[in-house]
Length: 116
Image (cartoon, rainbow, N blue to C red; front, top):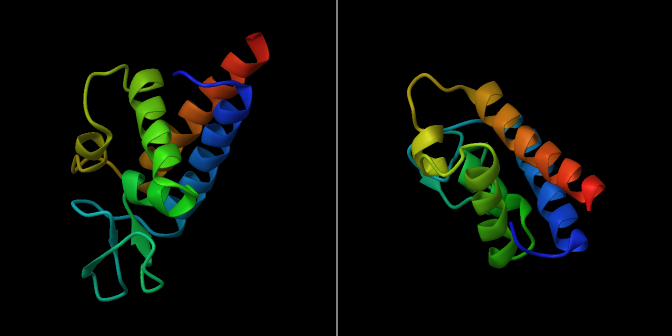
């Protein structure tokens, strides 16, 4: 992942907040859902459940940071093997799997920062 130490720290913090959000409510096949299970935008006040990418989008203060966080997960944890959305939507996944993945990417960024 490119970017200076401040950007990496910002991405790691975004991933941790996204993990917290996924643990509050988790969904697949759309960015977010409301209490009735209908798809909504990740920033919609009615959202009560998010996929990994939706949680990142909801926690990132700008779209560029959201893209950087998604790329960081793909590069560090998924090792470029698949898209985060596809990994999230696997029927075998649950909220803890997704939150743990996001936290692992954040820890990788922390380790990378510490070694710089």
